Length: 444
Image (cartoon, rainbow, N blue to C red; front, top):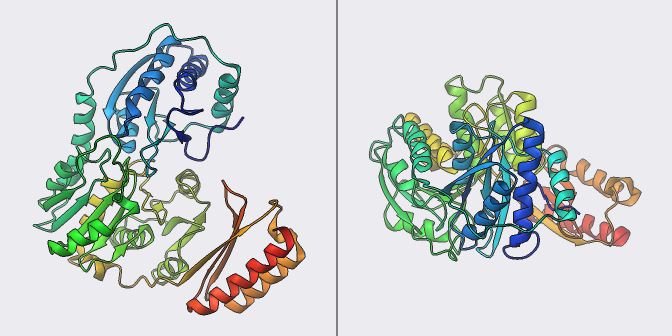
């Protein structure tokens, strides 16, 4: 039974494994496992986003934690990076986030951070899965007191504002899209501390509107507001605010690749990119790789997922990494992506360079990209099949270093994904469709 994906447990709230009984068992198992390792009663801090299911899931979680004899308290509605921060600041043994990030309100999830900011290891995940499979005793209480979250909020808010006060936006006009999520009660105060003129949209969560046609997956509303108000910059968060995407003064979207380009250049100019390496993923555009190369920066590609980006950052001792989605990590500051921190550092880079956002990313030329999904009956190693390997080799020769082919399977569906980047859209579409046909013939 595998319950954990690359970002903890995620499912429909109220359905296995996010039904009340299983969440209780999760909490109880987690506390037991930590106690066995630590040799004492562990302490935990939890936090949730604005979904209507968050409170009862957090209640079930605390009942399990306390049934196993641990201490636990709640930071209430707070961002995912906020939970990671208060875990370390409050010297808790672990922090637990109740969130499904950018997913619709009906979903929810559980993920665990250690005080270092790293996520729970796979060995512990397998142990908890085994405990849940065996079942656990019924809880002897129906509710617990989660305590006052205001102190935890204040600690995290002061942390962000201390960074913001070192950013002089000098009257820059900002629009924030808080996605009716966890950033809603933090972001306006934080960004006002930069001396920017701040307006915010999607600030009033009702439990069901989180991420609904807004935030980092739906930038149309932010774009409209930026243009209407003649703003210099728009920043969109997702539901738990661990990522941020941007809209420039002309209404153009600036994704995580372009943001990393801007941030890396700024860090390089300030001698803060000491090894001249940036970690991106296999999905990052080849245009980013070429733009970095012009500046003498090596781009390292990790598998998709912030977990793998972090592993590569630590292994290579790099100082910046992230994904197209806007999930960006500055490991010298934190091992957890924080959309508000990303926004602050991007504003700082713009203010110090005296450039607009469109000017700052103008040297990053994005190559056209085509993605074709092919239904498959099985998932063998694709390049072990001669016909597929030969077709892929022909594409590599045709691109001749001026493009990129990526073959991978979907992690959740029976699909092979053919992604090709190159200088001319029609040409790479023909290449992708041809390779997709070969895959269909061989394993479809």
